[in-house]
Image (cartoon, helix red, strand yellow):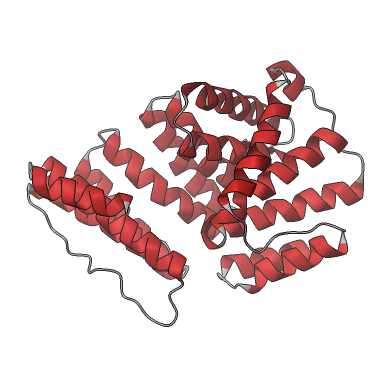
Length: 309
């Protein structure tokens, strides 16, 4: 009952979903930090990496299934919390993922365990600049995606795994066309299974990868218009500015000039600092792409610096 209730609250974008997950985990003797610092995250991720570094791919695939219902419930709640934290509490995503991995190594794996492994791999691929660390993360991610097939349904697809793996891990070793196709598949499966928020998160990364992989821009523009309609229908306003910025970029590439139709992020009492930061980053990144492809080098450098800042 709690799982369904949290899923409904998550789909509605309610902050209460995070609070209920934390309350449930507290009842199960688990503690979730409300915030953390970079040093703590790096320390926990490093410890997890050392544990995983001593496990071969075959050993990962042969991890025994969890038989303790209490720990299975904990992992299930953590998986829901990880979905919520993706947009609302990104600073604790890695800590949650590492905790899920520790529980899985200690007590066995279940379907929800895989999400923790893939989130860990995504964190490394997205944040590390060392090739050996990225290669190791790709190894972990690929092995656990194979492990997922042990628990998967006939569709063999999970929208949150598609997002994490094909959005952040697979692009390091697979053609972008393959990644974008799987992200689109994640969207379709998520919408058909009632997981609209996670399905639409797939859309954001799909559009970016489709631009980079050379998809026909007019066809992509038609898809983006459809996605915008779905985002508005399901009230996922947090991702709408990013998608609108991508639409401006596509229009710019088609027309050969910079559009900038999406206004700068509006600051209101309902915007959190994180939302404002993300909107600005998305706008500056899109303007950087537009200026680059239109041959405006100085403007490109200007917006690139803004993105980094």
